[in-house]
Image (cartoon, rainbow, N blue to C red; front, side, top):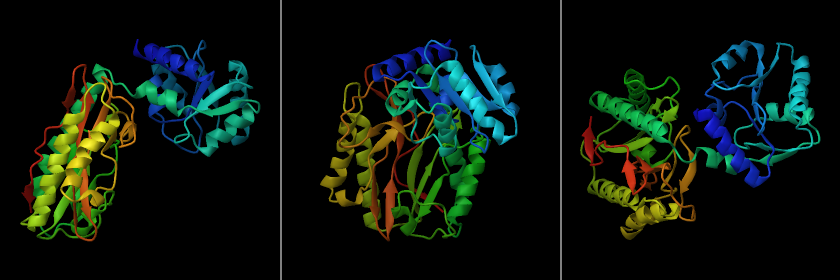
Length: 369
């Protein structure tokens, strides 16, 4: 049973860090451990995982039926619509599990102040600690089913972009192109919740790595960066390709070729036992040697899985070793402020004896419009 295996893995990580419980609100970690999906709302939801006890879920009454889908025993602490009653339910859960005074791990980037306040009030003597490390270790190595879900998410994303490209024309706005892509992502079979809003940026906007689609119209001579992804079974893809809108200046063709070579170098650097820094340095060296190092302004990649950004991170200072099952992006770029930008991004997974690239969409320069 995969969830029991995940419980055992988390228990080992917690023991190594001295934690006696973990409290999680809705998000990838809660879903990974239970298979349940809750959205953040005004009603708090908390999973309390304590080794040796059945997991406990604090949920509103209207969500309680979801717990029937669990494949393992769990304790339910449900509350009604009156917020005045909620602190008592939290206190009951903490008392039942015996957590007051114990070291309890939290996810700082995920837990809201809303849930934190209920938790701390219900166990005033508890010691609240950062559980980022054990939770990252829990999800960092993907199994066969997880990799297959990501492979399918890549296929969906590539199919959606190919369906979109013929509809991109000079005079279309970035926002209109993004809308076409989103429609095609759903037509191709993406889960309803996309991993992130697609980036469609042209001309000067493409020099902003995280630009949002605007009402700028595509013009001849633009570079067009499209950064998009799909979701399948709760796992995601995250890809980027750069196109030309008609003919472009020779320098823009040049920087595209440089980034393409940097992408290839970054992809080739991944293997079991290699440091994450090695991937970053391999890609960055190509751009630096070509004289554009100052225009590559971000890390070479990041882990992917249930989230678009998770461990491990391909940074030049990260000596973490790549291990089989780790999935990540390679996405070098060159961004010329006020002019144009290029990024080419692929998704990879470390195998027992090397690395597999899950994405296969052409990386060569392509013309649209």
